[in-house]
Image (cartoon, rainbow, N blue to C red; front, side):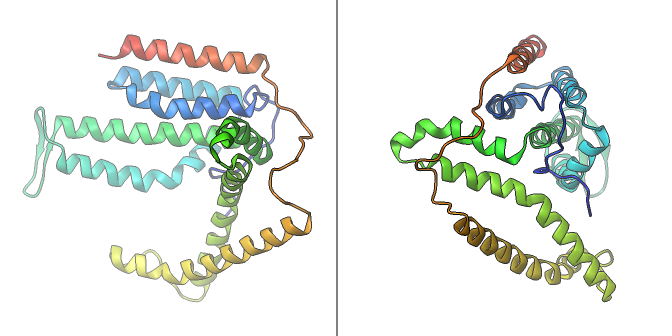
Length: 264
């Protein structure tokens, strides 16, 4: 039940922990676009190497990162099967009565799976090394210029931060409800796909009720503490760029240069 997932913060004093949240947010945002520049095994290998370097400097156990990425393995498997089934091109690797697997299908299945893994790993490193308060402050500072066109920067940043914060809580609540249903005889493993989906209905209903109750409790607690939005609010800790943020910039430039060289 206590498996770390995206949205959970792991306190530490590593190089990534000491970086400004704005730098990490901008890096992850840029990384989401950079991943699509990779188009061969060498370029994807370079991105995986940079993620491994990030894990090393974050001092986060690879096992924890694996547990964070584990929930998307089903999505990776489904995506791979669709590419193997529908993508045609190159030599025929395997011919079965119901499907023909082409070389391009295998290539796309592997590359898309690695791409999903890279995006999830980068997002997990961000949340593992950045507290919810820092994430809120960083997002607010980045989108603050949009207030001139009517965008509520503080409220939007707070909303995204709360959403990330409650992912581990809802995950834990789901596991508790599932265990309670299994103790009452519920079966989530046997049967075909439709049967398994129907078996999760007794889990989703109390989960949604619990989520709405938590949201109402949070709103009441914020009102009781005098929360009235971002107008006139001051900051206890001002964000400032430092040397680790320069390291991250060099890291990103090196990654772009490597991709440029390795692209075909």
